[in-house]
Length: 393
Image (cartoon, rainbow, N blue to C red; front, side, top):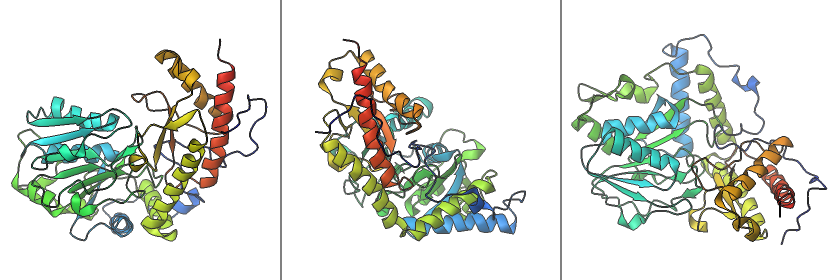
């Protein structure tokens, strides 16, 4: 068991970077604004220099993620949310749809489909935080919408083995907190979305939409019954607008943010590409796993190791004395821990998500240093002991 002090003595080592937010996430090691000096500020994104930067961002994305050559990569507005919404509004309705939800963002896509698009042949497969729905029960004669990694629950799908290669429907995957940290099974996915602000620590507001030939075929052979806002339109007169996937963005992108994304991609390439990124996230998770295994008061929210996220690490307090409190008292106790750590400037933004069970959420993606995670665990012990010692009998 970890011996807990009562807050009399602060841990000796502090994280060098206290930014553990789950989005926007920590910038890469060695980051400096000087790295963005080549950004073509004040220039049109439609000029040669702007197009070249956008194409470089797409090309590096394909190289590092290993996106198949026949899949298309587009830069779209509205972060990951915008990319997912474009896919849902443009592609759904041709056949039934299975909606998988095990955390708040998956729940959000359910709301879109059931309450906004009002699809009557939508089947909802839900599970509690910390669990996955029964993946064997998914009907791939339907389109299927799911998150690869639940950002607010710390639960991921273990792999893509549950998705058949001969599916009739489209597999639409929100991979925003998985891309660049977990291996995506590309041939099992028809739509993949993510934002720049997660694993690579990029800036907000820009999303990525990656589509398979099967998704292109759907776009060119099916027209939704509802009107599409201009910002969602991926076709013109029944044909794919290919420019969207060649750097000709629907709206004006920030060339400063584009430069920041390119910088992150080039850093990723310098540390070994996807394998190097995954190794860093896995290493951070292992620090937490080793600590949790010897620490009686804490455990992962994910019910099993196979579905445990290596990016959005969600923790619950299992100490018997805290578990015996009322739900409101437990929530109040848990809130003290991030508050104590923020006051000491040890960790910022590690509160559990507002819709999740009371707990902590610590980002462990590739831009976070393992030494900082190790230091944080000692401070978590300190904060827990201090808060528990102050509990009124």
